[in-house]
Image: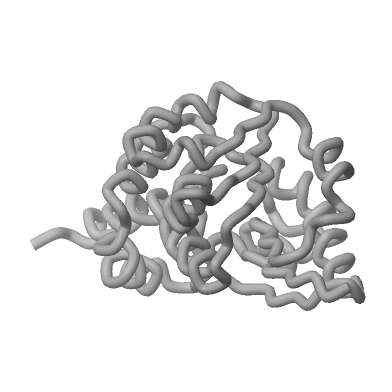
Length: 216
């Protein structure tokens, strides 16, 4: 029988695996979601890319498996055919998107770092969906400025609850990068809530996802 110390060590290891992506108060409950409905249905290619990304030093930037499943389902529900992805990293959510789109679907994928994208590209190619992806290295805003007049549909903003720090008191002990970006996240959330051009729905999935539908 495992000792209490061993139990705590096992829980800490599990927390490192999934906890930073979960806003649930119970790691056990989040693990239940993953093991019951996410991992059993996760495509083999997505599992391979998730495990590959876990070895990368910046792995905290990856999309969580439950959020990947959510995005895949959402895209199918709205019959999406053309999408954009701003911030690709190694491509886990990009792969979730590509698998959801029809064979003639297209994804405009933008990131300032091609090296990270190319780390996951062999997995995407093996999954047979690389032909749907138009990857462009560089900042996204110049491209978006050209498209803004024609862009409608649904937009999903990731990380809008930012490790739960959006409700942390000013003197809370936060990691440096969390504290640095928190004000930007708060500003974005405030702007989205006040924007009359869109309807919004903020969900506690992954690190927080805000779904926006353009109405004007």
